[in-house]
Image (tube, rainbow, N blue to C red; front, side, top):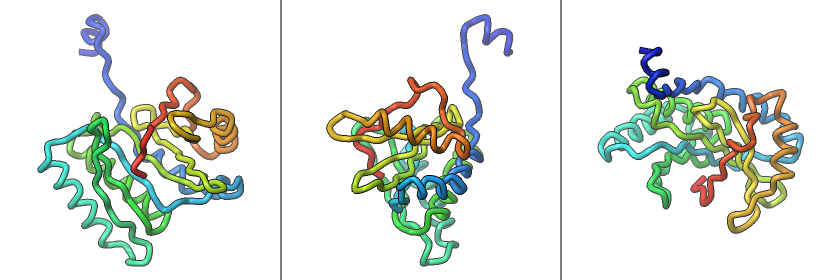
Length: 187
């Protein structure tokens, strides 16, 4: 079938590698030293599912998070953005617990055969009064920084600095044309 796919010009998407998301758990130390502070918000964006199916995955995430210590437990918010993508946003709680929640959602999607619906995980940081985001693109299994500075503008110089800073700790996307801006993030 691989030969036939190549002959007909079809490509298969690689299986998302959700394990690489945990690289952020060690990289956060260096990011904090560089002036970024975890903002207590993270989210995962997926292509739209049937309403009942998405509700089931949300309930499973809430059940998993209920097992965590109440002090470090993030809350779950469900949102739909202006483009129709579904978001599961984790607010509050501990940084590591948020990573566990993001990982749990991605793992569940993969187990259900819905890995191709995973788009990105977004982790928000604060930097001197502004929001800085680290985006994990599931298809590429790589991170990239996103620093919005107003209406549809971004701070490219700061993004490059952050990528260079975190390059040893995080698998950073090398192709900068794949550093897609995500405007209007609910995270």
